[in-house]
Amino acid sequence: MTDKSVDVVVVGAGFSGLYQLYRLREMGLTTRVFEAGSGVGGTWYWNRYPGARCDVESLNYSFSFSPELEQEWTWSEKYSPQPEILGYAEHVAERFDLKKDITFDTRVESAVYDGDTHTWTVTTDGGEVVSTRFFVMATGCLSVSKAPEIPGAETFPGPIYHTGHWPHEGVDFTGKRIAVIGTGSSGIQSIPIMAAQAAEATIFQRTPNFSMPAGNRPLTEEEVRTRKENYREYREAAKWSGFGVPVPAPTRSALEVPEEERNQAYQAGWDQGNLVAILTSYVDTLAVKEANDTAAEFVRAKIRDVVKDPELAEALSPRSFPFGTKRPCLDTGYYETFNDDHVHLVDIRKTPLVEITTKGVRTSEQEYEVDAIVFATGFDAMTGALTRVDIRGRNGVSLREKWGEGPRSYLGLTVAGFPNMFTITGPSSPSVLTNMMVAIEQHVDWVADCIGWLRDNDVAELEATDRAEDEWVRHVEEVGNTTLYPTADSWYMGSNVPGKPRVFMAYIGGMGAYREKCDEIAAKGYAGFALTPEPESVPA
Ligand code: N01
Image (cartoon, rainbow, N blue to C red; front, side):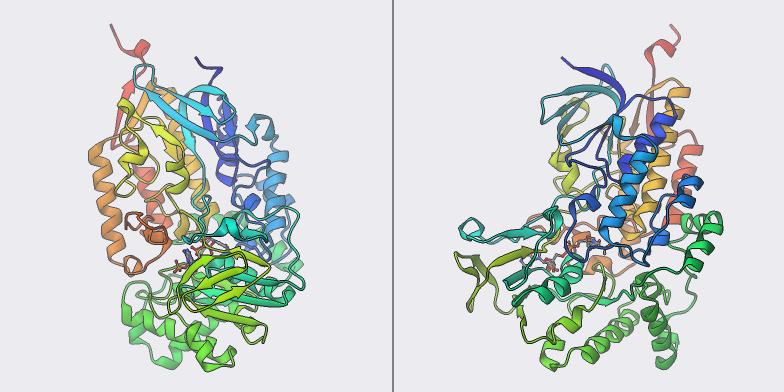
């Protein structure tokens, strides 16, 4: 028994959900959005840790669908802070009057497909049951946080925080002894600020990461004006670029360039504080180990320049994976922080974490007494938010079971056996390897256009065929295998979550090429999909 019936249910009111709602409403479709948080913004709603910023430049990290929105919104910094990005999400929600169709503080618990009526039945934790023709998971790639896999957290009397769901009122560590576990992007952004407040900061590092200075600063009026004048041209270039950020395409191998010239190219990217610039300096940086080594060594030399103690510099230097194959970071004073006497690094590869105790954190070697603990231990990425909901497709097949050996999808947008369901920036799409705003807009537009086409053509049901899905999965794997990404233990590979299948979960074929492929499939009347007509449109 359902409470209501709508055309589309969207899960999540981050940037994906907001824009999906906007598009569907413009098309005259009734849409309900369910959001677990109390406000919009998704990742920017939850990740309020000190120093949280996006490491795509603000002028690139915004919606392109509304020229008026582009002109009226002004970013303040090169890399704007989390509160400003969240403010932008709120502004979008207000400006387009989106909140009236969003139900906050509500988690979708299950979605079950009925092949006879071509509808999904969606049930929330508040007990609401909604029936819908289309079901869109806009739940984000990094929204299910994970704690370190060690016992004892419940015995620690002080506060334990996770960067991925930080208290809204903020935390002041002044005078406190703190432990931080994890040195990914969230740890690297927050550690300098938390350590500056703390009396003693002990950082537990499992894997050192590559990081470069963000070079953050206020934007000049001139920069903002120039971008506002050139948004159309800029957006077009971003849409067809590899990473969703227009940069000149490399033409040469790192190995054919003299060392001095190569280092000048890396230095130029370094000075810009632009990750993509270094990653794309040469054609083979992400594909050939020897080429990659040149960039990796450039960064390690920078770490040695900054960190005064050579042993500490070496401990902070990544050597176990190629540069760029785990998400590289942008920081403000990260390596400098370790020159302070009250900041300590514990290499937990050498002395593994054993437990959280009533006093703090114990490794195989000693117990560290602290007043507060921060987990900067990341997320069950890409699939976590999708498999957390009990999604059952045709004949009751569960998505969790289907993805037991790794995610399988057609274009990262649809899944065989799960008709009329779409995943925004789902696994096997470019998503996290690109500027997410560009990836989100492309997916949302494709989904909205697809739903519009189905409506106009009296199609009740669209379902990826097994064959199309198999071919896409194979293609994603083949393209991935031309790069160094699969060689790293990264969250891209699922290796940060014990027991998770080892699969490269993103598509590295490039945003532009992927867009072309998606457009082509749509233009061919949704090639690779089985289409079932509306019963009343079938001639008797
Ligand atoms: O998470 P992470 P994150 N015991 O998984 C360690 C985006 N993001 O929240 O590398 C001990 O990168 C783990 O060690 P290891 C961005 O895409 C963007 O920092 O697995 N340690 C690692 O050091 C980013 O990549 C921005 O060996 C454990 C750390 O915890 C993604 O979000 C800002 C452990 C987790 O690093 C995730 O970043 C922030 C354990 N059991 C985030 N488990 C910007 O745009 C994990 N670790 C700026």
